[in-house]
Length: 238
Image 1 (cartoon, helix red, strand yellow):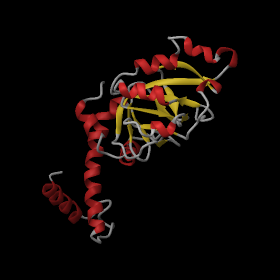
Image 2 (cartoon, rainbow, N blue to C red):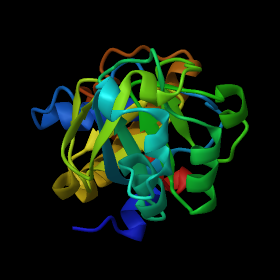
Image 3 (spheres, rainbow, N blue to C red):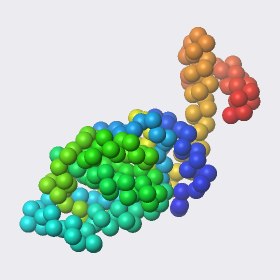
Image 4 (cartoon, helix red, strand yellow):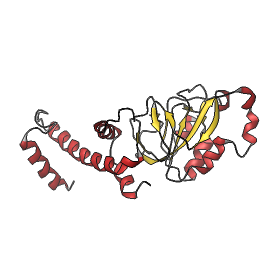
């Protein structure tokens, strides 16, 4: 099921923390990609369907620098075929000893309208990538070419990225904390629930700033808290 415009818009305004709680309620505990961080945490949320690239450990006789002369090289094909609005998710086996990609490839994806790039390895040219207007997530900078450690093998297959399972078409959401993977068939309901949760948490935060105790408020075990929340929503048009 394709990601709808409405769901994409809702996910632009909720946090990965809230999404993780909504997924946890459904028994999904490992959807947050571990040990990746945004190169530019000030960008808006990253939202898009996963398009995947899988690396395996490089075998030297099959992975000389001349492989990049082949227009069918999987990394190059993935960069040119990742759909606009999708998120490129790279399985680098949590190995940042060599780059998963560099500035030129990320720039090309940005120019093609890709919504973001995520790797559980590292990017080279990371200071440059951090200035791009595309959300990017990695574990740490890594200058060596990917060929020294990684061998690109598969495009758009199920992968693991930072210990999270990622299937093609899953909905990726990234913010200043990291990236969460939403199973495609759950995206609409998770987005709707997270939007409701965000409204309530904004209400709670406002009341806590005013000096109110969290007891009976968070969670709202007191009827007055629920009454106050409904009045707040009406006033704020939330």
